[in-house]
Every structure is written in C-alpha cells, then in structure tokens.
Length: 168
Image (cartoon, rainbow, N blue to C red; front, side):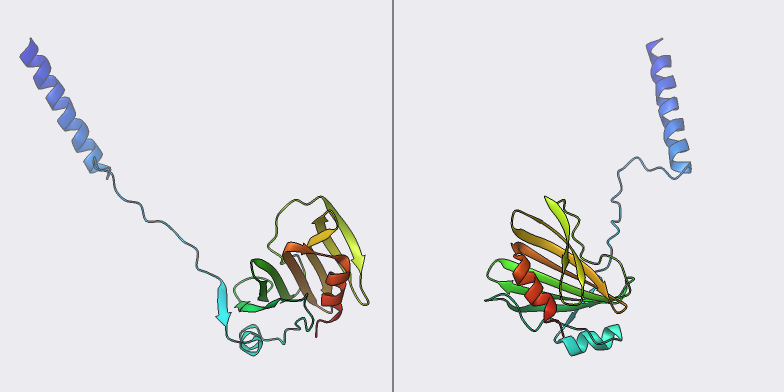
C-alpha cells in the first residue's frame, strides 16, 4: 500500500511539473527585469546651451541672496512644458529656479507647508508656500511662461521679491 501511494504521489508530482513547464511556468525563480525611467534632465554648460535645447531664451535671476552661486544648469525637453532648471548653492543650502514655456506648477515640490499665500511683486502675483517667516516654494506665470523658485532653507519675502524682480 505504501509503494502504491509513493508511485501515485511521484506520478502526480511529475504530471504537475509537466503542466507547469508546458504553461511556461518555471520551477526555478527567474530574475525580473526592472524598468527604469530615463533621466529627463540634460546637463548644460551654460544657459545659452539650455536655450538651444529648449528653443526659447530663458530669463534668469541677476540677483541672488548673498553667497549663492550657480551649481548646475539643466534643460528638460521631454516634458510639457519644457523648462530650464538652475540650481544655486551656498554650502548645503540650495535655491532651485525653473522657467518653462506654458503654464502650470513646474516646481516639483509636493510638500505640505504651514501656509500658502499670494505675494505681489512689481509685475507678478506669486503663490508662495512656507512656514514661520520663510518661503520655501514660489510659483507664478507671466507672458506665456511659468516659473518656480524653491529654497531648501527658505527665503524671506523681501529676499524673494528681490530675486523675482531681477529676473532678466
């Protein structure tokens, strides 16, 4: 009786393995290929290089808070809207400025802040988000373009206004 049970169990195992193999299921685990999105940022040596990629002349800040210097320039031509991104650094602090053709929020900042408010500059109305006395993200639109400025350590209203009013 034990021999018959063993034969039946072996036969069922072989039949099951045969069915799985015929259906394309392997008994051994297979490594899965991981899909990775391509990096949309195209590094640029200068704003002129970015302008060539984007097909428009980007307006950039001519005034920044003390100590900030250009760290990286990139163009993103695979999104809608296409935009330029400039990262300014002061040690560990960063300010990321973006300008794109079209409309919409291109900041890439999806954080929740203590407040969101409107701020009027000479020519623009900015939607600002921040906490305490500092603004961490500002977005606005003007003349067919969309803009954003994100400060890792925040920026005062006066500092933000000075940067925005000196975008040329």
